[in-house]
Length: 58
Image (tube, rainbow, N blue to C red; front, side, top):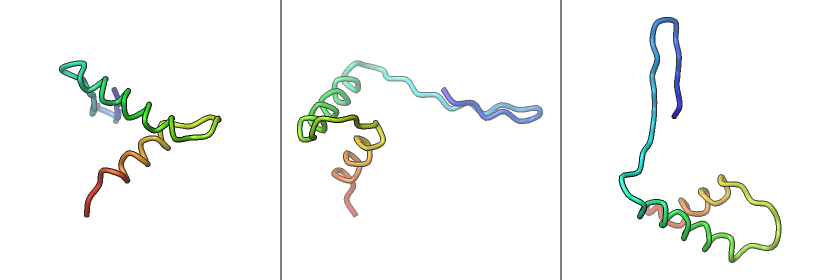
């Protein structure tokens, strides 16, 4: 949940999953990403950047 607070107002942004299929999809994408990488540390940003680049069509 992210909250943006002003003097007399709050904007809240939240996310929820209605089933575990979404979680399984994310785990499979992460496993596919990491199996092609050399040993080291990787961030979620790197995973998401690569995942987004592979799925976006222009």
